[in-house]
Amino acid sequence: DYSNFTAFYEELRSAHEAWDNILRREEMRLVIDLKCGDCVIVANQRCMHGRYAFDASSFPRVVMGCYVGMDELGSKWRRSGFP
Image (cartoon, rainbow, N blue to C red; front, side):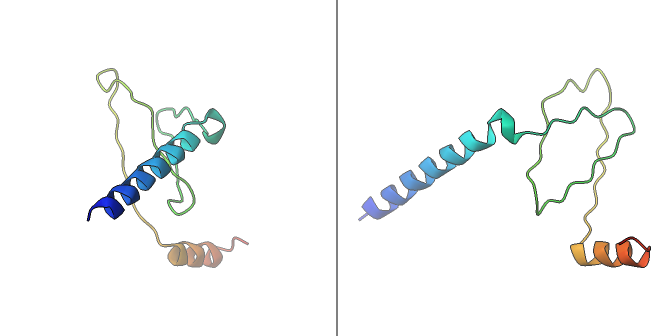
C-alpha cells in the first residue's frame, strides 16, 4: 500500500514550497554588492547564503573557501586577546 508514501511526499512537497515562499521574501534577504578584493565570512550554521547570477565573461570570478570549526575559531579569537 503506497498511500502512506504518497501522503508523506505530498506533505513534504507542500512544506518545501512553504519554505521556499518564506525564503523568497525580499525582507528575508541581505544583499551585499562586493567589489574586487572584498572578503565575506559566512557562519554556515547560522545563515543560508547564495548569489545572484552573473556574467562571468565580463570579469573573472575567483572563489576561495575554507572551513573552520567554531571551537578552533573561538580558541584563536581568545588567544589573540579579543573579548
